[in-house]
Image 1 (tube, rainbow, N blue to C red):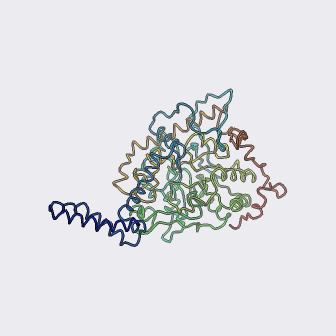
Image 2 (cartoon, rainbow, N blue to C red):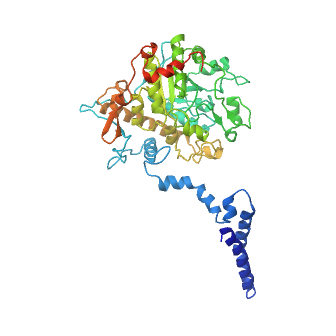
Image 3 (cartoon, rainbow, N blue to C red):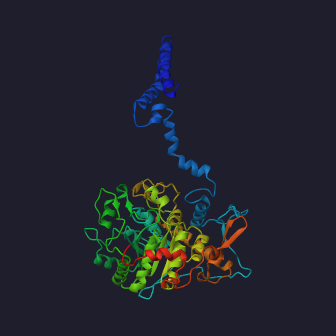
Length: 527
């Protein structure tokens, strides 16, 4: 007998029993107060046609949806271990929280990581460690054509737009950047009043929607760009080609999160999802990209200009490098985003299965610039799950000059990894435009936490450099980072990821085998 049949039997038998008992005492009819709602709900379940579970399991089938509604909370608070949580394990979430709050961040009783597993990584210390005292290292951004170079921190706030984040979250991030002396990337949603209110250093990102510098048709507007780029707080300009969360897809701001204020800032209509096109309209070739870089640098009076991308087809990036050689135009920096995804709302397939992961992308970009003899002119920024000092150390060893963190900075604001960023129901008020929710973000408190997280992480980065016997970030090399390949087979990054010879990609006779086919396909005049 099925549950559905049993429920029908329950309806008739319980009703008959109550009626029979009512013959002896009318008080028995009060039982219908309990039974009637169950019968009504069960009948509705059996008659509805959308949910087979409810049709087959009337009433009790609803408990599935109830349990599913708080499955994520059960998973996070009671099931996952300190190292098994995804996308970010509790070990690193706790680390960010502790540093942001100024709480004790040390660990007793040894590491909880399995140091014998394949993939475990570490840095070796020196028998003569250095006692470093400069806990505010700087990285110079600005190539030979830059008139206003920027001295950046090795850790900065990655691209997150106003609209995706609440105004209080944006103000907290920017005030934190001001307090800590590091930069805040606007994301492609453009400059908003909340990016400007507290005076933190800004990296203005220009996406395919040209928000903040577009005309009525959505095309790039040089005059509007020039006005905004002239602001003192705008230190660098970043052209977004693609991002790790959804490479090749463009950006999405759901209509549910679009307010009249955001629509005015972005110059878009109300009532529709704000979708940035997958590709730019201001250029369509590698050479065109570099011409656009030069145009923005000229319009901004020589501020550093670079571009951000998630590495996809290798030949297309090599085409950009070839265009740099042909035109003599080089960006001041390249931001390499990992395909691990980020804070943005994205189709599942894009997040899970498109784009090169950050480590592989960083290795490729670094080698490409070295192979074309461009590495000394262009800074590399790595973006993708940068949460601890070791994550930064590892990225720098692979060729990065600085890193950007989005999720780390969100956690420092109080994000609990609820993963509801795309619903406008963020439980902490960070990724929502709901006024009743985002008022929970107290700017003076949260901004200090952002600054604390940055300071403690950079301090620990400097201490790692000193422990390795080095005097500066520039001395860090691939050989300093070790990885257990399998069992007792341990190799350092120099052995695992050999660096190609400087200038070898400029001569067809010296192109390494791993680059040969991609170099044949690379075209500076076309993607």
